Structures are given as structure tokens and as C-alpha cells.
Length: 322
Image (cartoon, rainbow, N blue to C red; front, side, top):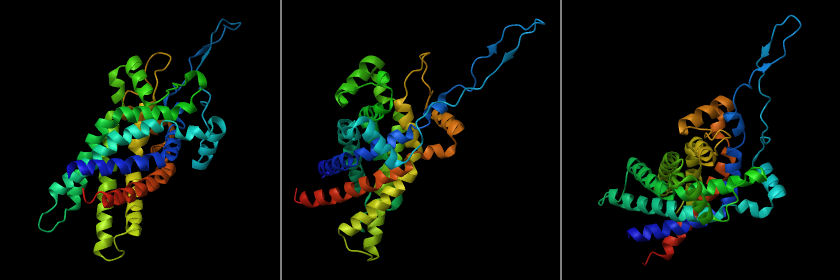
């Protein structure tokens, strides 16, 4: 029964991940908009002028000109720009990393969630309180994220590569090549860069997504609003996707930026860690910067969660006799 939960969750996650990959790529690109403003120094060095006739010298601190940034545009505009500048295949940049990530991360979290949920279900009433569902999601999400972090880092970098100047692109050929190059040039620890953020985000997403889906589905069936079928699954999964998007977007923005950062000319990383990244982002771009990419996030989370749970329910029916 334990293995079956992993297989069912893994199949559903891979189908959902690959189906919504272009939306995830657009979300990453939007989350990186304005990043240069967050890490730029506030002033340029003082300009010393030649002494004047009276022998007095003057020094003036000049503010930096506004950093060159990509214009802040919406979901459709970003998608069109990617297609025009990089071609349609660019929408699937990093899809191999997505498949590996779903195989490692989502298979683990979905399987562990089912195991914990079954263990904590009351054998007499066949029910489990919402608090225990949330706890199961937190534990399962954290473990799954730790397992899948290398693929997550590779996916973010591959998705973000097209926005960089040609000379600065990493040009990973596949997720295997990405992981190999990162290990060789940056060390094994680079594969777990941003892992604390990944774990925190995964705990929030899994707890809100899986627990809310189960709770909403149970409520719909218990109150007789709809019967157990496609309509119930779509309704409950869309609501779960919205809850997960609202809960996880701030952590997701910081995670994306930390994973994608590169050393500056002085060899220093732009961010010292998650908290430093959050503070610089808010200071330079305002608090709403933590909800950058929210529209593509909810646009992806909705379809992703619907495909995930509808596929999961169908796979469960197919494997019910095993």
C-alpha cells in the first residue's frame, strides 16, 4: 500500500508538471524582473574635479542612473516575448529538470503524505482532523524538497538562462549536464543552494495543497453539494491550488532569486542568504515584490493542481485492484 501511493503520486505529478511547464517558466522569468535594482550599490564613487583658479577642489557624489531592467510586463507579454526572442521550444527550457524534480520531489511527498494520513486516520470513524492533514503535508513536503533540491536548482537555472546576455548564459544541455557542471565548477554543495527555502516552500505548498484538497473534497461530499466525480475533483483541486499559491508565493520569489544568483565581478554573491535577499528585494522594489509572478503562479497552480488530482484519481481507479 505504501509503494502504491508513491507510484500513483509520481505518475500524476509528472503529467501535471510537464503539462504546465511553460507557465512555470514564465513565472520564474517574472519573479526575476527588477532583480538588478535589489543588488545595485546606492552611489557611484565620488568624482573629483581639478582644482579651480583659487586652488579649491570639489568632490561630488552622483547617484547611479536607474539600472537597466527588462520592462515589467504581464503573463501574456512575457510569453510572447520569449517566443519572439528565443522561439517556441524555449517555453520548455528545463523540462527535463521538471521531470526529474517531479520524480524525486513530488513522488516522495505524495507517497509520504498518503502513508502518514493513513496512519493517523481514526480506524473507527475513518476520518482524520485537518490539523493532522496539515502536519502530514508539512513533514512530507519537507522531506520531498530535500530529496529533489538538485533538480529544483537545475530547473530554475535552465528556465532563467534565456533572459541573460548570450555571453553570460550557462547553456546547460540537460538536467544531467546542469548538475554535472554545477558540481564541477561550484562544488557539491551548490546542488543544495537555497535548500532551506525549497524545504520551507515545499512544506507550505504540500500542507496547503494536499490538506485543503482532501478537506474541501470531504466537505463537498459530506454536505451533498456534488457527488464524487470529475466536477468535485476539479472544484476541490482549483480551490487547493489557489490556497497553495497565496501561501507560497513570497517564499517562491526568494527561492528563485537565491538559486539563480551568480557571483559579481568581485567574486561576492549578491545575497548572503534568504533573509538578506528578502530584505534587499523589499527595500529596492517594495513589499509587493514578494508577490511578483503571482498571476502566472496562480495560472500555473490552478491547472497544475487540477491536472494533478484529476490524474491521481484516475490512476487510483486503474490501480485499485493492485
